[in-house]
Amino acid sequence: MGSGLRAVAALCRPFTLLPPALGFASGAVTAAGAEPSIPFSSDVLLHAGIGTVMAAVLNAASNALNQIFDLEIDRLNKPERPLPSGRMTLRTAWTWTMTLYAVALGLAWLVAPGGRRDCFWIVVVAAAFTVLYSAPPARTKRFGLLANLTIAIPRGVLLKVAGWAAVKPALTLEPWFIGGIFGLFLLGASTTKDFADMPGDARAGCRTLPVVYGVRRAAWIVAPFFVLPFALISAGAAAGILTGHLLALQLLAVVLSVYGLFVCALMLQRPEALAAERNHPSWAHMYWMMLLAQAGFAAAYLL
Image (tube, rainbow, N blue to C red; front, side, top):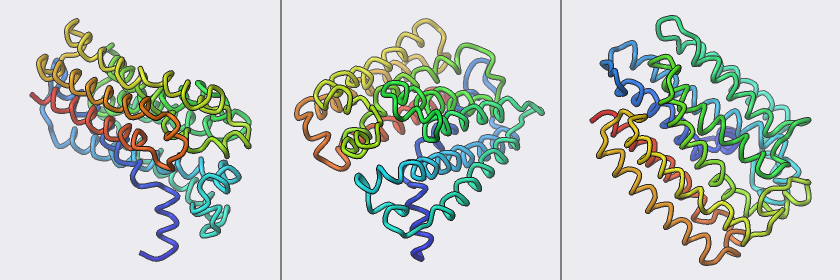
């Protein structure tokens, strides 16, 4: 791969693209398996496939936009990234960012089962949240829990609902309940990326939870979000809100809760390591938990 393509890949951050892609696909599979279930026709597979690619492209656009507005922060926190390292100009970064957003919205427009455009409008709202997070004048990244909320809504709640809308109208409680589980998880877990960025964030006036409360207290604040959201899987299945396989959903709730407790132990055993290590293991585990949860939901609704 040439140096230019490597810079583009670094701008898009490929590792972060898999969870949203799988999240959309999982949402579509969940919708197909939810009562009343529908067969996986070519039309269902087509819309789910287009939406899966769209979710990855939209996340790449969001990553690129964030790096543009985080340039001064990255000069201190992540100088190896394309912009602070000089491997890419701001003009090129803007070109890629706008192209990626345009492609994502174009793909979302094609996800129109039965002529419905609800998936497209959900994606429009999600894209708007990514702009609010990174770009002035809103730049919610500066405001602690509000920053987490601006991440949790598009990447947790709306992602799942958009995937559902690629198959069925998202007019029932079930898709929003599932999205709420993922949104609640990200409301706390997304802070794992902030611990190592404290010096640059503090200098730039971004009042993330670790900057405001310190490493140890912030770790205790976010720890419950690695466990408690998954109790909602068990509760939702028992109440009949979730119509997937009951035993599979209960098992998924237990596995994710145990995994979450393991991540909490990693964070709370040596909280100071969260800020000392560039990529603390809890950050990677957040992504692996997302992947496991997405795959688990799909499996529970396929049974």
